[in-house]
Image (cartoon, rainbow, N blue to C red; front, side):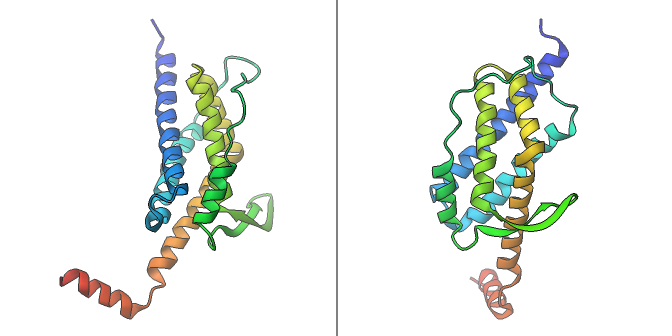
Length: 188
């Protein structure tokens, strides 16, 4: 009979894998252009949800894999087509101002929404490779490590950029147009 800890690890791995799949499905649909008018809002929701998964793993004590060396998951997932499709989707909005590290190196640099989403996708796919191969602890270790070392920061920046874009779209609108739209909505 499995002990309590292995059951908890199994449940956490299952929930994390489901979150990873949902994010990947959503980003793939965005890249395919399934809902271009909703891409900013849907992207904001997807990033918020995957950050919850990452934060849960980041806040817990280090996951220690069963083996000293990471098992091979096969070839790295190909995310360049996804990155290119997302760059097309976010054309004119893709690049943003970023900091190298807000604590240790506040040098201004640039970031890219399409690259951020591709980096996050690659890390989640790598962890899913472990999970689907029956290595839930290895999957959790990978998602935790990569969240803290890379994709968590990329997801947080992309979330901030999408939130900022939505705020500009909704709050920087011409007041007369907004009043007309509100009137039309309330008086059909």
